Image (cartoon, rainbow, N blue to C red; front, side, top):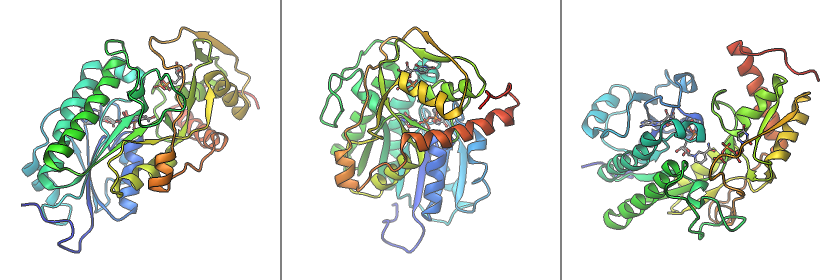
Amino acid sequence: MPESPKSAKRPLRSLITGGAGFVGSHLCERLIAEGHEVICIDNLLTGRRENISQLIDHPRFVFIEHDVTRPIDVPQLRSRTDGRLNPGNHLDYVLHLASPASPKDYARHPIHTLKVGGLGTYHALGVAKAYQSAFLIASTSEVYGDPEINPQNEGYWGHVNPIGPRSCYDEAKRFAEAITMAYHRQHGVRVRIARIFNTYGERMRLDDGRVLPNFIPQALEGRPLTVYGDGRQTRSCCYVSDLVDGLYRLLVSNETGPINLGNPEEVTILELARKVIEQTGSSSTIVFEPLPVDDPMQRRPDITKAQTLLGWTPKVALTEGLAKAVSYFKDKLHETGASRPVAAH
Ligand code: NAD
Ligand code: UDP
């Protein structure tokens, strides 16, 4: 029988899937900073070892390379972690973040995306059930699809094309939310559903394909910024430190959710391109390319629930976050030697 979390004085223990990814690696750091023991599981499909290299020797951190579309072997998990972590069968939290998240990534891996949202969530829930852990799922604003209301609140059921090119991601996350609620209702698993809106910052890959990892290097290298469509579609961009704080607050709360986590500062993509050009002092121009199929026209979170239930409000304004992101991508371009002369200031 798993120990009750309250039965002994010991560090809290968390298992996080997708922990070597962009958001997951920041969350691993936060969990370690909060004193948790952290078991990070990742198959490195879109994540990287270097994201967790600073944690790898930490006595409260264990990395297991594993594909969570395959069963997570609970006894094996126990024996593989016991060498490193304090003995005991307990697992207080399971956080399921594993999934390609960039449209470019899930277009490359549509079946895997469905499998990790479906089978991966099922396996992670199985662990939470076996260990009586609280379970957090990283869901997405994509469950709202191309929304007919703006801002989007959690009561909105969404407007998703079930067979379009984005459906592998959107429907996988909708299934993930559904099975999470089924485990809650049928097995009493304590669950928390986070609906994450566009997040950016340090550790995004140069080839990530999402809007800021495209725009910022383009501006830094003096290449044209590729705006898809006419750029009138909107997004609301949240800096990663704010998101991680929201996720942590939700994790340790008793809120089932779903709860939107995002920064309500909404901009059009054309405005975003201009802001990046201004921030980098680049001489880049803007080119217009075709709008991807089913690209949502508007996205802005209603964060009333997060504010009232979690006391959470994002602190990093877009201009401040962009400055941090620009500095990160500058270093990244330098490191990889991919940098052509940086645009004149
Ligand atoms: P990411 O691609 O950087 O991270 C995902 C991680 O999951 C990677 O490390 C990848 O290797 C891992 N992974 C994928 N399939 C796996 C599998 N089968 N087994 C084990 N590991 C696997 O993406 P991210 O931006 O850090 O997103 C993290 C989570 O947050 C995702 O679930 C995503 O859907 C959700 N989310 C992110 C955003 C955002 O703007 N970043 C927005 C909404 C939702
Ligand atoms: N986008 C763009 N140029 C790019 C990359 C993305 O205009 O080089 C647009 C994309 O069409 C979408 C928005 O930026 O309208 C955000 O795209 P992203 O891939 O970051 O995430 P999404 O919100 O679509 O999941």
